[in-house]
Image (cartoon, rainbow, N blue to C red; front, top):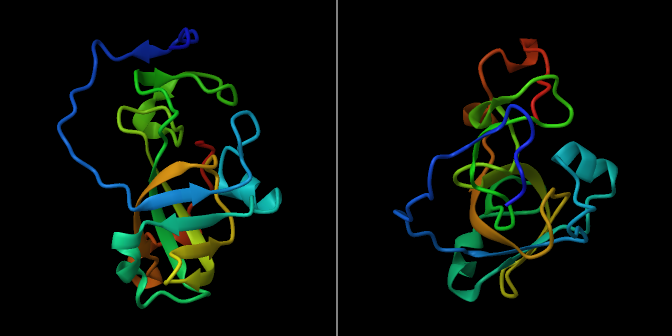
Length: 166
């Protein structure tokens, strides 16, 4: 593990493995360690990363009902992220903050979320083209959920100032 920065606090011990997850596929992108964007805005500005999902055969029937143009919520496992910090000091912030106040991949359970647009879908091959992703090539995919504006937008979200958390 890397040495914590000033103000960072590691967890006191190892995490227990008390959940079983099934990876439903793999995220494919042009991003590699060292050149992966920090967020979806950067990914989109960088051309999207040739982003696509490769869905494992047993899970391909679950793609039924999805179509190009649909908004999708992806949950994925940041398998190369640290898991030992509960307080972090990102380089873009003046002071440390708790992990749960940040969008950093460094967290006890490195589950990431992205809201993307389906660009293409081949349910037989299990390939879903998406507009962009901020994940390195080979990142395990946990789940896909449809984005529903009537459910997934905070009330008054247009009135809130954008957050500086990342």
